[in-house]
Image 1 (cartoon, rainbow, N blue to C red):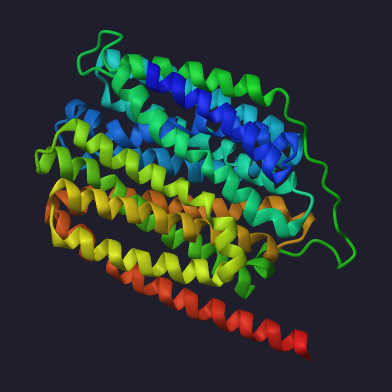
Image 2: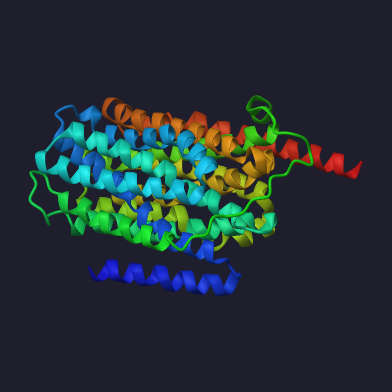
Amino acid sequence: MLIIALILTLIVVSAIVLTKKFNLTRNISLLFMAQPLVMCSAPIIVFIGGLLSSELTSNASLATLPITLLILGIAAGSIPGAMLAKAKGRKFAIFTGFSCLFIAALLSVLATKVASFELFSLASFLFGTGGAFTQQLRFAAIESTKNANDIPKVLAILMLSGVFAAFLGPEIAVIGKNWLNSPHGYAGSFMFLTIFIGLAAVIMLFFEEPKIMEDSSTGGTRALSTIIKQPIFMIAISTATIGFALMSYLMTATPLSMHHMQGHSLIETKWVIQTHIAAMYLPSIITPWLVKKVALKGLLISGSIIYIIVAFIAFSGQEVIHYWWALLLLGIGWNFLFLTGTSLLPQSYKASERHKVQATNDFILFGFQAIASLMAGWVLFTGGWSSVVVTSLPFIVALFFVNLAYFSFIKAKNQIKSN
C-alpha cells in the first residue's frame, strides 16, 4: 500500500512540476493525472491475464485469449468512440469509456470468484472497449494544444504518465490478489481497480471540452478513401501499427514463456513486465529534446534499429536478464515509433476530418495488435520462444521500408518548398 500511495503522490507532484516548467494548460495537467489511473487496467490484464487464464481453462493455447480480446475490444470500440466524441464531445466519450472500465472491473471480480474463463474473457473485451473510448485522451490533448508545433512535446508529456501505470497496475494485481476469496486469486485486484477508475472520473469532471475551429478554407471534407491514399497517412499508420503489433506480440508471450515454460518466479516476471511498460513511457522525458535534435525521421530510424537489437537479445537466451533487456529495449523502441506515428497523423487531415481519420487509425492499429497478441500464444505453445522471435523478423524488415518511404516523402516535400 505504501508503494501505491507513493505512486499517487508522484503523479500529482509530476503534474504540478511539468505544468509550471512547460506552461501546460489545465486540460493537459488533468489528462496527465487521470490517464495512469485508467491505463493501469491494461498492465493488470497483460501481467495476470495469461497466468489467470491458464488456471481457468484446460486449453493452454487459449491462455492469451483475454489479452487478445482486450485489444480486439479497443479495435471494436475505436470507431464508435470517435463517432461519439464527434457527436457528444471528447469529455462525454471519455466518461463512457470510464463507465465501461468500471463495469469490466466488477465483471472480472465475479469471473474470478466463480472461476469462469468465459466471464473473464468477456470482461477483458469490455476492458478493451472502455480503453478505446479512453484513447480519446491523447486526441483531447492534441486538441487542447494551441500551437501545432508543440504536439510532439505534449504527447510525450502525456505518454510519460504511463510510467506510473506501469508500476501501479502490477502492484494492484499483487497487493489485491488475496483480498477477496476466489479459487485462483485476483478478485481483490480488480475490486481495487474500481477505486482508481472512480478517482480518474472525479479528476476529469474539471476537464473543459476543447474548442476546435473547423477549417473550411481549403475546401470541403474529403472522402476517407482519398485521405488514406496520402503517403503521409500510410507512413503514419504503418509506423504506429508495426511498432505496436510487434511490441504486443513479444510482450504477450513473455509472461507465459517466463513463468509457465521457463519456471521463473512470479516476482521476476512482474519485474520484467513493469520494466517493459515503464520503458514504453519513460523515454518521453527526453523525446521532446530528441525531436528537436534529430526530428521525427531520426526517432523513426532509432526505433527501428532498437527493434533489431531486441530480436538479437531475445534470441540469445531465456534467462531473466535476457527477457529483461529485450523487454526494456522493446518498450523504448515502441515509444519512439508510436510517438512518430501519432505526431505524423495530424498532417494527413483537416480539423473537419479528424474524427473519422482518428477512428480509422485506431481501428487498424489495434486490429493488427489483436491479431499479433492472439498469434503470440499459438506460436509460443507450438514452436517455443525462438519461433516467436524469428516470426517477428519480417515485420522489423518492413519497418525499414517505412523509413525509406518517409525519407522520400521529406525529400519530395523539401523540393516542392524550394521551388
